[in-house]
Amino acid sequence: MSVYTGRIIKGIGGFYYVDTADGVFECRARGVMRQKKITPLVGDIVEITVDDNLKTGAVERIEPRRNELIRPSVSNIDIMAVVAATANPRPNLYLLDKLIASAENMDITPLICFNKTDVDSGEELAEIYEKSGFDVLRLSAETGQNIELLKDKLKDKTTVFAGNSGVGKSSLLNMLFGEEIFETGQVSDRVERGKHTTRHSELKRLPFGGYIIDTPGFGSFDITLLEIDDLSSLFRDIEPFSYECRFRDCSHTVEAGCSVLQALRNGKIEQSRHENYCKLVQEIRDAQKWK
Image (tube, one colour):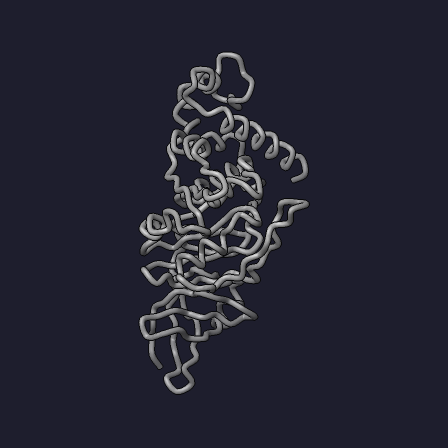
């Protein structure tokens, strides 16, 4: 028997595929894990034992996770590449800001990627988020614009790609790998919505270092995980002004004398960002009514 430390890159039907320095091994979780209801996740750093003859192994131990997404179930993510299209489909800034907030909530660094700049440059969109304190890339999977910059950002990191259907996530991933690894879908002219083409979560090693995971259906997250009192801390452009607010229980949405609203009037906070913050406050309130 040999002992390895590696990373789970895929999990299907109770089998876990662990990437190690000596290759990928198919493993099962030890029975004691099932008894304790411990489920390994894609992205987990694990210790495995491998039968040298059969070349199959068992997951013995899971290292503590830095973070964990619930849907889909993946762990230990460094970067969330939040992808939006500049056109076709029209950019959904509310979804974009929700995904950014989810990344901040999980201590994952958001990287804002505006794709399809060959159709629309996206300069105004980029300016909004750069002013709000984010790292922004304007990309084109069609022409290859700034793909090398994207590679630099993702090198030696574990990155989750997130965004609405049809924004070009799979096309960007294919550009990163230099080959057609991910199936791409067309965007419907009628609904401006793409069909999800990814079938399961799988960690793939990037040729220049690091891993990516394309998450099927990850266009939203569980809103009930957020509390209104914590929300301002997940909007990095709103957070500094929330500390100055004289009202301890201020929602920073309509209250007279609110320092956040004053900063908004002074142009220190982008209007669309605050509008989406207010929408998210209301969505959390509505969700809490049904908890």
